Length: 499
Image (cartoon, rainbow, N blue to C red; front, side, top):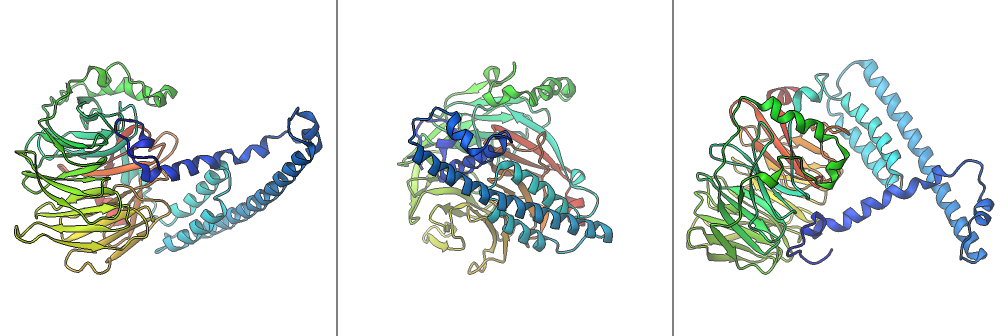
């Protein structure tokens, strides 16, 4: 990947761990060009019919190679059709039996892995048809209530001009959603109306994370400009009266093709109140600051950087208290325990570390080597667990009292980005590179997958998830490279009942 961005705002530059994979996934799309050649044209005609500068021998050699590729492709295509037939017959048998198969997931896993090897060279078109048929079989394992009732789209938050890396919900009233984007800004949103309420424009680089103070109206953002900022906000929630009128024009806007250009409708962030100056600027990192979090009580913060260190600062004085060193490669995330002075940092070096500040005289550190690729995040739960997610396509649940080996391992089909765990029910939300978001319980049982179609869900990689369990309803928020954040209503009692 390229070097750390200082002020370059593009999402692709803002976090190089992802770059290689992105480039690779784009190359798949061009493989189906052979199908588009009109049936009657023979290879010879192609040789003659184009005024090529290449010598004839070289061209025929090339076309010969293309022919071999085409035959290989054909074999894969046939194998794929057979697999699909197999799936359909299994599917019919299942619906014939009319029962939800318990433990159906292993079968799905086998089909998925077989498919992922054989389809890596296939065109996008084949991939999607294959996915369509596998999702049919998967849906028959679930009870018939259908995932719509379990996970409903609540609102889309559109206004950023580049990918959104991180999001978080305030811990004090008024409850608002905050998003951190590669467009150098952080935005605060009204959860109900989807209206942007405030813009923070103090950073000179990609904003990589956002976290809110436990008791005051203060936000902490980390940036590619090598600093973390603490800033105060005041927001006025829209009156509850006219939401339908406010959101109506936005909804038509949602599907217009212009949205990709990041153009914002009339009342976009341009006219939103803007905060441009931080209350405190935390400087001392030599690289991109990728994440930051408040320690319990909110008097200290921790930052994680690509310079391989995490820093602990005093909020009131902006003074550096400790530098936590030991990781061999760039840090990817940091998280603090909700009630104790504990910090966990994750890194590209495939480890995450637990730092203990409970006893002022001893600062112990434990290293956990449970993954085989970049650990993209590790988070504390309200109990005594740590949950870690990785580019190695696994998520592991650990017990703080005995961290020698994980108590559960979730295996998935795509790299996992910043995860979050709901406080009350301890449900883990996994955002994936392949645009899916999946929900699991702490013992590794899959509960649901958020609905995703052309009209619903993320169009590109999902970067982060966060929960909000205010009142009776439980909301999950997701954000991604497609420049939008999405709010979902999760029916947890129904989810747990299905399990």
